[in-house]
Length: 494
Image (cartoon, rainbow, N blue to C red):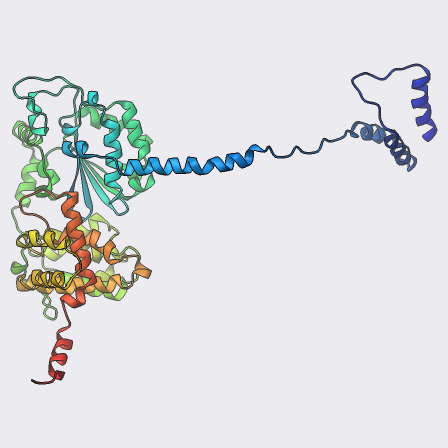
């Protein structure tokens, strides 16, 4: 074999076979290595493979010196992004707020915060405010969507033309007809869809579409195959304002006159059996839910509280103190409706028969919200707002005590029990994640609302601040009667 190899190379040189100019000659060490390898008995085919694979691999190129400069430039870019984000946070939305397109309206019948969107108040497309309005919507909703919430969308008034009959929606057109376009573009609607991530869709529990046109209903029907079944079940079409009352508290909504006029026109044109049946059913007053505290007869003898509330709190103390998200999570709406009916018929509720621990918590919130007058009473509304802006001091504590201890007897007994209970829950926030602040967000709107004004973010925030302060200082506001008596007895006489 070595002889055959040497004749192969020498013969090629003797016959004057010149190497190709593009191929570099092999070095001597490479040939000797081939000869040694061949002398061990490797076949010729393997030799040829070795020859073809004897290419020098160039060493890896060093990293370009621009890497350091690129890393150095990352910090200014990040700083620029942070500056842009800061500018967005500080953006002035006063012009958007003045339109009143998006507002809050307290809580619904399930004690969930409610956002209201009025299509008739959308600005004309020519004003180029739709993108800014989207940023305002995201900023406004971010404060609440961490918890369950609902949306009411009033569709009437969204059209290509805005004329004098829409003056109730904020357009001062006098007697002159102004033709402008208020309908958002398809591109803007696409931006809206992609601007709201999963948390907005997950925590949205109900979407009420009021006065939807046939076109809207048709589009929603067509899109249902592309929408998850779970989300599709959240959408409810409301044809008349009277039907909306069973889901939310209409007295907390600032409904534009043009929407009311449209609803009245619809009711005159067709009076359905459903509406008349609902009015008849609503004529009988309930015994517990929706009844004044002074008129409720089903009371717990030991605590002096409504029996259903006493049973719910006792069950929660035994089984719900460490449950994550207690009073924040929702419960099955049909189950809550059935339990309310049982209580109104005078039947005792056994919460141990239900596996969902959030049911008694929702019952408590629903009871508070269904009261004809809030637990803290309308008369305390201005005082609560004033105290919420005070610095923490002895005067603030005293004024807070005055608010509670001047309530009617049954209101005071229920408030005392609830706030001490909430204080105990907040002290176990490491397990249940419900701090005094978190509890205030979900409980505050159920304790107080105004008699003569629609709820808004400002008043809701102030009520929540007061509620948080009352929870944190519950034992100072409601000292234990037995301990107070003992302290008095042990005190030296003067």
